[in-house]
Image (cartoon, rainbow, N blue to C red; front, side):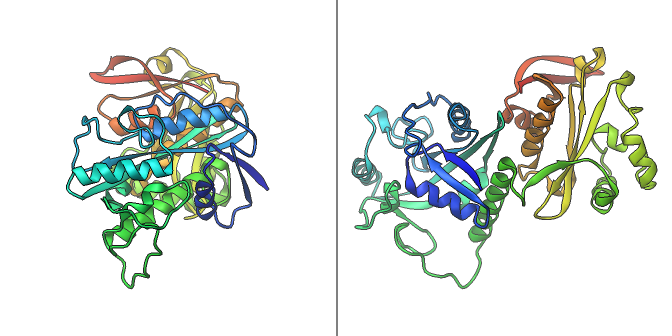
Length: 381
């Protein structure tokens, strides 16, 4: 059984993770179980950044850690309004930390001043520390899909550790969060989006913890021939350049010859040793992408190639797979003795930049190569 430390003393959070990882052989411990009283300085600007800070901090005490952070936002207030809860849900407007009753009293009064009912949503960030690597996840689409009403009159019922559930009302049923939601006979767009969010979150946790049903990196072999060729054929049919280069450098239709080429070392720039991995989604049983890791840098790679080349197949983009795949690749980099990894992307490719930044990438500089501005990021592994 895997033991996982939750960076919280909140028992309700432990139950949430049990549901997300239902069927997995995992035992959850809390900070109280291990008598951990230290707290990190949460100075991030988003829930995801704070979750990463906490996961890395508590990783000093335990090998495997899950942390999350959330921010509460009212649609009626601008982001700059000092009354906006944001990341300071328990310490609003500079107040001392509020207990559950204090939170209900504060937000009941605030909502009263805003007319008695406001539209609200939570933005949730998640991070996992494992084997020195931090994985993180945040889905903004789910936040807007799960918008609800916050009202001034609290329910008499309580969820320990989740006091604002007593002020929050579901839009579709008109019931408080603390009340059992009536069964729904039809699926709505909101339900579908939230169901997809939970699936992705569960998938992320399984990947980050190394549990079955998540993502994992595998070497090419005849066992995966159908999944690999399916991915590459889709990429080619989309009319896009397959990345990384190592994967497209030979025709994969002659699979045996292509396999021999992948392990030959012939493809690396100027003889640089490298390793190519494919990213398997165990739940879907498909390949979602590929990475090529260069074991060292030459002058060309130091300028604009970097240690890692990566790509996600067209149909699996915008699902968070790129961030998770790079996190797995960084673990492979540690195995071959790399302590710092260079990743490079076009400045206009903001999606790639976010993926690198979420994995701890720090921008060193920008260079112009063949008329294209490239950003060079270093990641400590």
